[in-house]
Amino acid sequence: MNKIIDLRSDTVTQPTPAMREAMYRAEVGDDVFGEDPTVNRLEELAAEKVGKEASLFVVSGTMGNLVSIVTHCQRGDEVIIGDQAHAFYYEVGGSAVLGGLPFHPLPNRDGMLDPGEVEAAIRADNIHMPRTGLVCLENTHNRQGGVALTPAQMDSVIRVARRYNVPVHLDGARIFNAAVALGLDVRELTRNVDSVMFCLSKGLSAPVGSMVAGDKDYIQRARKYRKMVGGGLRQAGILAAAGIVALTEMVDRMAEDHEAAQLLAQGLSQIKGLIIDPQKVQTNIVVFEVGSPGPSAQEFVANLAKEGVRVIPFGGRRLRAVTHYGIEKQDIFMALAAIRRIMAT
Ligand code: TLP
Image 1: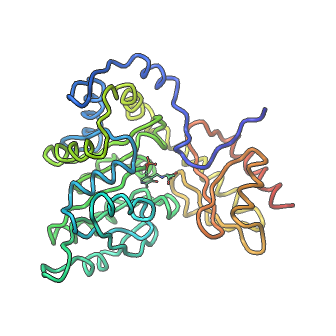
Image 2: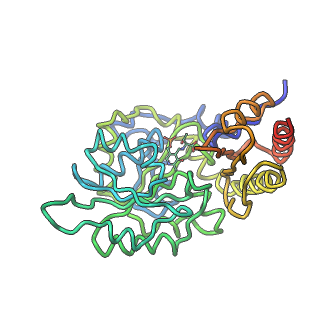
């Protein structure tokens, strides 16, 4: 049978042989007692990579954002965030239900928030209004096509938040993609935020897990919230072992995913009936649109799946394809050929 070319997400990446081996050999202990040596090693390594004092292993990006956000805020505080941010668009329920935190969404443009709009949204100290508890940024920006924010862009928002003593959390699910695309050490992107969540799954190819990093006191408090949401993981070293391989071996190769995404974007831009600007594709996420008349996004997905190529509908007539470890140039050529076939019928 032909290989299924699965471009639905970088979350579908398979662990590498080195990860499987590391998982098999992992030394473990009970992490709830702080005694899993492999988790402890991962937490030290991750903190060092993003230039923070400490970090915390969590099961998912969603848990990481939730724990990060509730650790910064008090019940009833307002969270300023982009209207296309993952932590708002998909995750607001968690912070609302479990954190009692209203969100204040602002328009996202090319992954950015407008610093002036952030300043205007920060609440005055006034009995009628909630306190502004947090500003959230996302880099790379998933729903806006994987755009990588530069340190200068991030700092323009962080400076405003600082002026009002509001902390900043970074949803850096794909922060290593941003660093690789911009040719920077990831610390350039994490240095000025108070907390960062990044995923070991996705482009870094670990099977499970994300990290939350920040200063020691913050991570100690976050650890308590992680336990509250059932995130005490016992012999998690089995998973952390793959995370260590992810951080030591899988960062630089992401450039290949970005090249594959660019190849895909260039190819899609040549196909009649599809709309995409390849210049906007900076990392491993390719968002494109089926023009009208033409198949709906759902029809496109179903027709393409019959050809062995998987993408996801991404709102309206938009679709998303994500490149990752295991997707080779040859797969991109095959995917493009399949897309050409379904668009021709
Ligand atoms: N994004 C997933 C899901 O939406 C399915 C994807 O395929 O892109 N922040 C950002 C920016 C994300 O893209 C995601 C996952 C998360 C947080 C949540 O991470 P997980 O899936 O580990 O809970």
